[in-house]
Figure 1 (tube, rainbow, N blue to C red):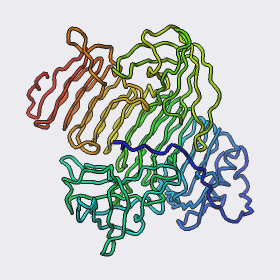
Figure 2 (cartoon, rainbow, N blue to C red):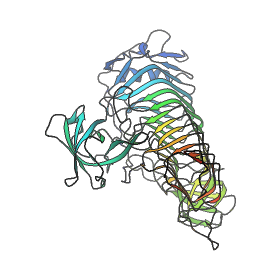
Figure 3 (cartoon, rainbow, N blue to C red):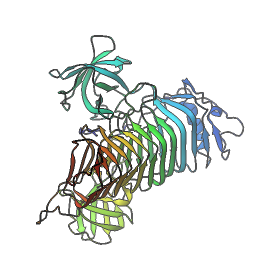
Figure 4 (cartoon, rainbow, N blue to C red):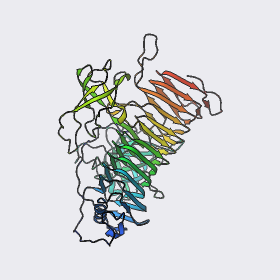
Amino acid sequence: MLPKRVLATGAIALMGVFGTAMSFHPPEGQGKPGAGVYRASSFGVVGDGVTDDGPAIGRLLEAAMRAPGARIVFDERKTYHVAGAASRYVLDIAGADGMTIDGQGSTFELGPRVRFMRLRNSRRVSVRRLNVDFRPVPFADGVVTGVDAERRRLDVRISGDAGSVCGGPTHDDGEQAFFGMLWTDGPYGAESRHFWIERVEPGEAPNTVRAYAAPEFTEFADLRGKTWRISLPVPGIAHRYGPGACFGIRDNNTVTFEDVELWSAPWIGFEVARNSGNVTFRRVHIRPKPGSGRLMSTCRDGFHVKGNRGRLLWDGCIVTGMTDDAFNISTHSSEVSHILSPDRVEVRQRFPLLHIPWRKGAELVAVDGRTSRLLGRSRVTAVKVGPEPEPIQGEPAAPLSELTLERPIAGLDVGTTVWDAKSANPNTTLRRCHIEMSCRMQSPVTMEDCDVTALLWFYSEPIEGPYPGPVVVRNCTLRRGRGNPVHAVIVSGGPADRDAAGSASGPRAIHDITFENNRIYGGFVVEGVEGLRIVKNRFPEPGAPFVLNGNRHQQVSGNTDAAGRPTPNP
């Protein structure tokens, strides 16, 4: 689950170093507009794992960008080292049409200040058959060998370079989160806990360190030496250079990723924001490098998904090893700042960065944030965008927007939470995915035939929203594990205020939630939902919490326990 500490929101432009410029002339038929296929080897890309291939890949991409429908092909199963990149990204692509990038199973090893891809304002782009890793890896794993709660200290034996993790948080980018991850074996797989770090010092023995906890960490009571493992971030690499998604996918129309592996990242794996059309991830795996013995993959979220209008599909993906959420699927909500007339309001995005723009034809949804009651919906017939505010540490900030509504919404007032339902990832599907880290689902989503060993959490908050619904979870196996040691599923609809008859008043903002034909190992809690179906599920774990509270219009039927007996209707 996401930590509570406030994270820095700015970004710093970081320039890679290319070295001496080279004069290079590709062979006939390569690198010319209309040539079609652009082979990396024809542009001097070596792929020996030692040479810095960043400059040559830059020339390759520059040539391919001039040709609509270009196909970029790397050599088969090579290792490309990229120490620097002119714009920080190995592949910085804007305005492409019909481009294909085929890694042919090769691996890209990136320097700490490099990210793999920034894809913007492009259409019909396909990325396939490649692996991404970092060198050095932005974390080190170890075994907790001793616990000193009084000194707020863990003794750790590190596998790898113990010196790389020594030091403390750096604040060059503003206040930064700095945490590692504790791991222990649970009944269904690894369980995890954030370890907030004050500093890490060398230990007395070789390959050992002492990790001192920051004030945020208080959970020492059950820590035992040799039964807990830990992943420690490398100061100056992990959590820094943000926003720094390894793959930044923004403002595109129809993008496909197939057979892509991400094995480590200092921040978010994939940011997927404001896209339209079809955005598809098939066999895209974020996980520790197979055979490496690593515990971690990314130092933040695996997939951070915000404000998309298109149809999103994850099919056959493995997502595990991150220290934050596997999936955060949400948008940025706004609040009403002024009521100009019954059908005209001024709204302000609550989180000022990554603006989710309002458009004519948007479907405004309004919720009373104090009670989580749905106030109503109305089509936006006109949008007037205010002046551009000052950037925040170089990032564009969201402007005020004046919206004209097709019809007034009763109860709309200053402070009311609003969002555009059409820009809230309304068509999102996860199918046949294997997930081992908590999932924050704050948008409509369908999950089918998935295997999840982690908390599956449907909820909302003022910054990241909206209120999810409709939601369908069917034919899945859901187990407690990473993110929550007790519960496999929590649906948090907010306070359950009551009417005069004692029933939960409504309508509720989280709505139309269906769990059907699933196997659920662990606690199951649903509160404050409008329209709930819990049908034909199996709850095999004896004594696991099963709580339904404050829901309206619920159907609970055909559910059984481990012995196949009907579960009691709560």
